[in-house]
Structures are given as structure tokens and as C-alpha cells.
Image 1 (cartoon, rainbow, N blue to C red):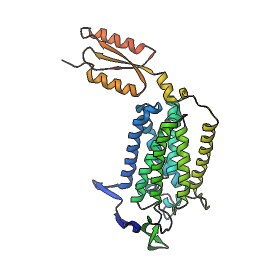
Image 2: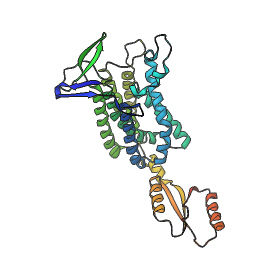
Image 3: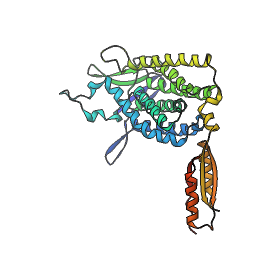
Image 4: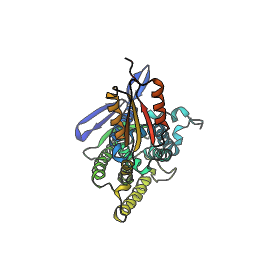
Length: 355
């Protein structure tokens, strides 16, 4: 339990990091908020996927690997620089504390690095253009970060140094072993609002001026890097390069932003881009061929549902109705012949309804 106030706004809140308990096990707000950000990102990216030539099924398959690996990456990145926090008095590592991510201690850049590596490998295996998928993922990262920062608010962490600004946040923290009231920068809020503004701008820019695959990806690093670099300078809990005064996320933010901005200027100002080379246009120009097989007179809703889904996945559909009067052996031969065709990428068969 803790108290957070906004004196300039006349607000005071009592924060309980535990939302509820299930059979005695605590469910933390931090985890709920992170999960909410993840779900919002998945829903939005799934809706946007056709605009980038990405199949919705590929998003789900990719997340199966990316989510756990990103959490591991975010935790490892944090622990590398704060390993002493996870040692017992005798110097041994406390593995229980190392896996307690619900108490905080996830570094965004560690998660981003792990997600990018996972996506790169996934795209290589699935033969999908990495930069097109990364452009779509830029929306998801901004959504996840703008929502996820509120988990820091509930945990009363990731705040800045003292300030007297109207929107200052009042908290209690321990200074030299004594509990003191301080008024600080709500840096979690700064970053959340910065990501929200970035998301809005990225949606507008991508809709009107997206010229090449990778543009959104670079815009994300340019925007987030600049914002994170400045906001990190206000924080009191930054990760440092071991025993140096250099803030890891500040250097990483400004460095990635600089590289992304230079790349964007070069690619937009000095390179010509053919719209036909966008992955989405390549997918539209060369759709995969899928056969839909159904019992004569029974296609109905199943056929309509499959066609709608396949259209979103950039597939061209061929329909085959199995004659109701044909013997089962003839139907099986017809299906086998379709599956033997090399030009068909997939054959979907509807089960015959029993009369």
C-alpha cells in the first residue's frame, strides 16, 4: 500500500499493487496492466495487418514465441545492470526474486531487442519480409508502452527528481533510511503521453506518406529514442553502465534515434521508391491459391466465413462442391487430387453434415 498525490491538481490516491487474490495467490495490477497493453496491441495490429501484407495467423504464431522471449529479455536487461539487487546477504543469487517480475524490474529496451531478434528469425523461417512486419509491430510497441507505463504508476516507481511544476507527483520514499515526503516528476506519465502522441502521428504519417517497408520501424526508434533520452534524464532509478554515471537507456535512446533519423532522411530524400515493391503490394500481386471444398448445398456460412478470412490473408479462392450423389470413394479421390496439385497452397475441406 502507498499514497500518491498530485498537489497541484488536488488529487490523492491510495495505491494497492495487488488487485485481488485467487486461491490465496496475489494478482498484481502491474501484470494486469501489462496484459491489457498487450491485448490492445494485438487487437489493433490484427486489424492493421492487411495494410502491411501480414496474415493475422502469422501474428498469433509470432507472438507465441515473441511474448515469453521479450519478457525474458526485458528482465535480463534489467538484471545485468542491477544484479546486486538479486543477491542474498551471503552473496548468492536469489532466483526467487529474479523471477518476481510482478514487483517490477522489466527494462523496455531489453524487451524490444528480444522482440526484434525473435521477429527477424520468425520472418526468415516463414519467408515474410521482416521490415513490413516490423512496420506493423511499431504500432504494437507504442501501444504496449503507453499502457504499460501505468503499471509503474501503480507500483510507485519509474518517477523523476524533485519539481514544483503544477502536475508534480507527491510520494513517500526512503532517504538515508528515513521515510520522507517528496514531490517529483511523474515520468511514467510523460512517457505514456509521448508514446500516445507518437502513435497518433505514426498512424497519420503511415496512412499518407509511407513509401517503403521499414519506414514505420525507423520512425518508432526515432520518436521513442528522442523521448526516452530526455525523460530518462529526469528519472532517479535509471540503469547505469555498471559503476559509471552514464545512463544506459539515455545513451541507447539517443543513439538509436540518431541512426533512425539519419536513415529516414537518406531514404526519403535521396532514394526513389516503387510502390510495387511494398510487401503488401507484392502479396496482392501474387496471392496464394487456396481450394475450398464443401458438400453440395451445404457451403453456406462456412464458405462465407472462410472466404472472408482468406481475402484478408491475400489468398485467391477456388470453390469445389462435392456432388451429393457421389460415392464416398469418389469424393476422397477428388480431395486427394486437389491436395496433389502443386499450385494449391492449401486445401480446406468442410465436414459433411449428417442428415
